[in-house]
Image (tube, rainbow, N blue to C red; front, side, top):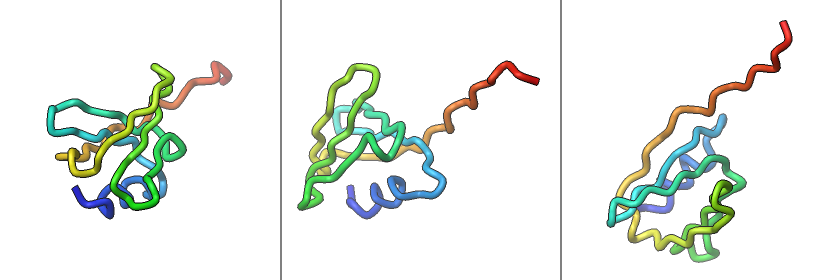
Length: 80
């Protein structure tokens, strides 16, 4: 995978959540741009998973696809 392709999704305005697909078919969701960062040499991607409170360290060479996900549903405030 080319880091430029990942940066394109990462810096899209407005941001659209996406998932990273690895060679072993594991998927890692990037729900918000603040939950992802590149290493200085752009060889490694770090993604924070809010639900598990873990950080995934991913070698860019192991990424086979990027899938855009639907935006999160807007929350209703209950007011009319």
